[in-house]
Length: 274
Image 1 (cartoon, rainbow, N blue to C red):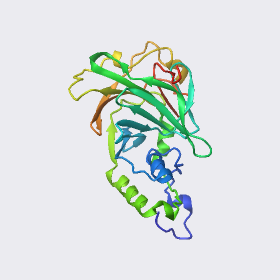
Image 2: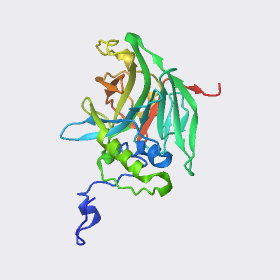
Image 3: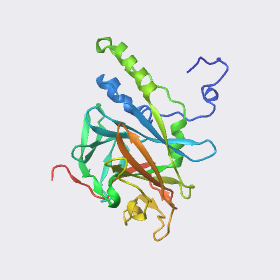
């Protein structure tokens, strides 16, 4: 951030934008791996909703790793909880899909920064027309608006941990970051809901999008107050490619109010120990 005139307040210099905690920023969360462990970051794609009037709201970052995984970072604090459709809650920092076996698990960090994998996992769900359901996300628009605020973070890197290389990796991260617009219908409630499907190849889905591709069920009533049972709503598709992996994102804005800022989940989950 440029130096400010001493007569100018900190908030005025930010033009009224809200401060964004690194713990909730989809731009910053992928960097924890680099600054904590010193490991490079694979190219990251930031996903944002274009809600019109020049408003672009980032709601997730996603990357394909060298280990043949997809990682998604949602806009939530590591201590915030999400929810599976079966009612089980979990803290989440990021979500990992193991592409070879189709298993998804959640990772969080405790107060000492130790990595913890949640006990709940799920497998890709098979849908008609060759789609495989990865996850469902619901994002409160007011919460996403904070993602466009000002972000500052001081990172202390011990000299013995090769700070020069970490700076180079950060510069590479910023240079290789891409942004993808996710198409949206008109906003009806206070949130957007996006269903993410995995495609085996670019030709496996030829459309059109059908209501059956968007999971429905009583579990929505636990996530969104006033979920419009029996009411139809528009579902808008967007196809993206992340590191050679094709994804289809289906986005809707049903009537109702999201409970909380951000939820991630799946229709079916099970205990990793079972």
